[in-house]
Length: 205
Image 1 (cartoon, one colour):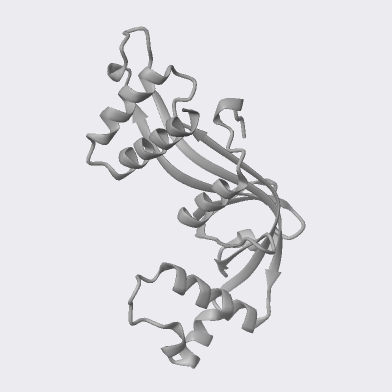
Image 2 (cartoon, one colour):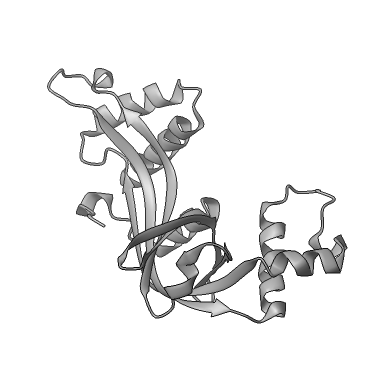
């Protein structure tokens, strides 16, 4: 990923936070000699440096993915930045965003117990607090049948790159004008970018 120095996420803990909060990722590999991508949730095991997930068995990507260096992209908040918000008319539109790219190698999971553990962890992560749903309460035969329709995997992390493009290449006064405009927006992405931009400015002071 192309990362100008002022957009580089240097603190790996910030990258981990993005990976956890925006865990519905895009996994890229080569299949039959061409790039192939699947959109799927990935669960981070920070201590052991693994990402866990599963493919639908009919998805051909898993069949030749082992021993490849693959790329997982975690898409954070993003939004359009209008030059009309600046103090000058000598400007063009741009886009602010946060993203994390992770390289690694895939190991397929064929152990049913390990696969079920990853299912349980995923349900615990995404179910709302206080939700009555528990995977262990579902009929075991039914869950067992569903598990045969997926191929579990874990990805050993070998490289993490993070980029936060938050107008750091513009004067502070202009960044503040952008923040003011984004804070007036009703869009979730816009307000998140405003919060991140403001936090970045506070760190600079």
